[in-house]
Image: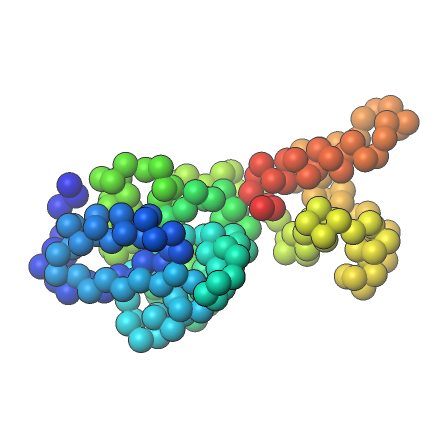
Length: 227
């Protein structure tokens, strides 16, 4: 068991997870380590935002795949949006991301790098002792993101292209129209995206361009740029 340096202090922790069993497990572990702590829970993003305002926690332990509201589908994008909101509105908030979808944090690497509070990552497969260490790191204001994949320099507009192409299934002409850009500009975006993902055309120009798109989709998912 991790020996907390704050075991005698009144620590306030908010745990955000929509899976009741996992939530209970996290609560039990935290209560054992921080017996004097005030620990609150939230099962969706809206509830989490309300709890942050009411509780003013010392740390937020948040899963990425959560619903926006009760009864809605859990989405990684919802958790990502919640994190961005927390970091924007509470720049000194200590955050622990406890999730099975750690690699998707590359989408907000810039925001994480600029966050002033503690920020740590704990994959749900981590041992209990190591998870508690990450929580304590966050409470101490430490940044611990070594488990993130190699940093990718991805512009938000490129993520929009990937989403429209592979999640909404739009063709280039439709994507350009939706984004209000020229198709030539969109082609330029594709080359930039593929360069970051280290995907390049074959020397044989007769190769089907669709093969590049298929590889782009596969690699973008592998790097966490898409769900």
